[in-house]
Image 1 (cartoon, one colour):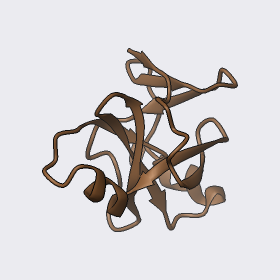
Image 2 (cartoon, helix red, strand yellow):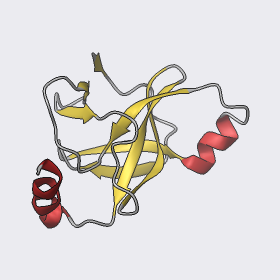
Image 3 (cartoon, one colour):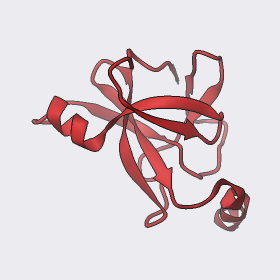
Length: 116
């Protein structure tokens, strides 16, 4: 399935997504707690982690027509990656935004070890 980012003008945090090299905006986890104190939103996957991209993944198409893969929830590698916020892809539907302590130049080494 293909998504586009949904009305992100109020999202205040920025991140460079490593698979598409696109800058995305997102809500922090704290802001999501303010917006949805009772919950009531869906998280359909994760973006920004070092997981290996494969064909069957859903994706987000950016305004610049770049593709960002949406990985299944739980794809992040703890303690090296963690959820920092959420980016809207529809009404009450979000993807988790993942940050990492792994430098970009080490991503190939991490991916190679994961693939084995």
